[in-house]
Length: 202
Image (cartoon, rainbow, N blue to C red; front, top):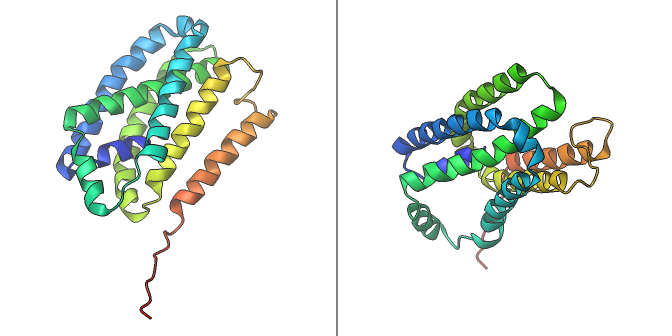
C-alpha cells in the first residue's frame, strides 16, 4: 500500500515501471541484507536508522504535507521525478526489509526459510502495489492510512531496538495485540467512505 502511494504520484504510464525498478533495487539489497543477517541482528543502530526513516517519512506527510486544493496537490506531485520516486521506493522498502528480515530471524533459524520469505515478499509487494494503485482511486483515505501504518511500523522498530522487553512476535504478549489492533483500526479507517461536504444556499 505504501509503495503504491509513492508510485501514484507519477503519470499512469510510469507507475508500473517505477515499481519494477524500485523493487529490483530492493531485491538486490535484500540479498545483501540476508547475507549479512548475523551482523544486522547485532547492529541495533541499523534498526534505529530504519525506524527513524519510516517515522520521518510518515510524519513529513501527515504533519507537513497539507494540500490546500486539488490544483496545489497536482503541482506538488510534479515536483518529484521518476528516478526520485524510484529511489524513494527503494529506501522505503529497505527500511521495511530490515524489520521483516530481523523479525524472521527471531522466529526461525533456518536460513532457507528466511531467504524464501524475502523473495516471496518482493514478488507479492510488486503485485499488491499495482492492485493498491487502483484501490486508491476508489478509497481516497487509503493514502493517509498508508502513512499511518508506516508511522506505527517505524515506532515498532524503534521500540524493539530500544530493548524495552516488548515482544511484538508472540501472541501471548500484549505488545503483539496492541500493534495489530492499531494496524486494523488504520485499515478500517482507510476503507471507510469519505464524507462529502454539502453546501446549502440560504
